[in-house]
Length: 285
Image (spheres, rainbow, N blue to C red):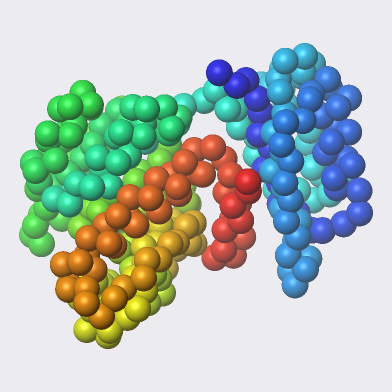
């Protein structure tokens, strides 16, 4: 297993940034494994991801902040550091459509997603065959228009003991309330929307697309905010539609996309490859 640290930085663009970061790592005995950066010229913004091997690194990672903060202060950096060995705890919310859930559980089981999934929460019991197969506890919390607040309180109680780092809405067909979203730090909930946002927002986007006669259908994974389907976009993809395709064909093609788009977004998040600014994301290789 790779034992490395990842540093994510955003700050005003200025001379000497690259040199300062790499020199800091070098002087502490670190060997850089990957480095990537992006400049937004309009905003004069610099964003960077650098990963280095911890073998021979002389700074205890628990003391990293104390040592690195003078560099950060000099350049006005907003930054965070993460360890590749850390396995974030991910909770999956799902309703009756189980294709995204099954895909995520398989990718976690095969090692593609380096995370732990301590529980799955659903408002229906239909997905139990998958959670039983992968031996992950399923908690069924029915949701109606009359019990939504109580259901969300129950969900929060289920999440609390696990120290959840990320919630993934894998076709969870309920709109989370602002009160629920505020219980978590920003950009800690990922959703899959079954259209190419910002087109066809809200419910039944495939039906909207079919009626519009589109030639492409898409899927979008994004961070959840209090504004429905408006959070920063992480990943999107499309597939071509023929005039011969029925509504059912369109839905099936869309579901194939949803699995891939959501798994990419989750993997990039848990591998600390995403930096946000404004309502945009930068995805580092």
